[in-house]
Image (cartoon, one colour):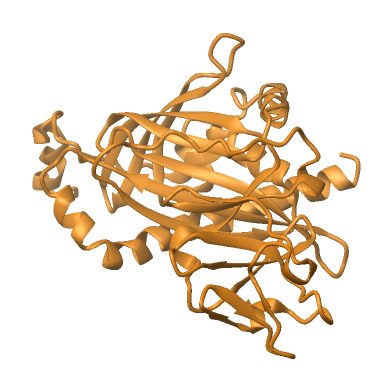
Length: 334
């Protein structure tokens, strides 16, 4: 017999509280969404995203992951790169092979703002020295970008299109995962909001798509409850938009954390040994809140970031299976 106290909790729960009580519902008893998740609607949204200009800019790392003590190896679109910071903190990105005999520069060390090759001590970093030329790069404070015209093959721009982020107090975390698919498959996953509560029942509940992209308003608008564990959740209203061909932004419009964003960037890495394409999913969560306790959360950022990263990685373990499956079917002509 159901506990009478538990039975009364939902009725007594104040509707104004940001955290709400969720009724327990068997997974298979949810309202099916396959009728609403129209393949033509999703594919049309994907094609409009692909048509957005990128200026040949690619996200390749979290800002805090690139330091001035050790160079970092990066691969974007099959191009080997090395990234580090100069003594003034400026981001530097260039070819990853030493111009002398092709040694991996990321195996060297940073000394006085330059990368010293481990094989023979050649130092690079100054523009044009030994024929080494850097690539245009940009640090937006959360993510690092590089412009590769030979990969993007579009009209280049001076700066990338950085999504609009919350102004004022914020807390950010960046998670990076790799999948065997193409960037378009990652974008397609994010532009199918209907799968949320079915594929991620541990994180989402009561998901309803209120609006699909239209010519005058190219976005998805959804109501969804983020599960906190057990029978508690945070209901919000959010939008999904594509400011670029490899970027999908989820922004909370109403509810707890209004103004917070989750940016999903899909960056091509290059083919694996078996020929399959590899894509890096670099997801930045930039959270904000007007609640007084958020200031304490920002102070505890070093402790909270691992939990935020773990949550994103958990979701993407499932979502990469979705993206990889989509690529596998497409590569077979289905």
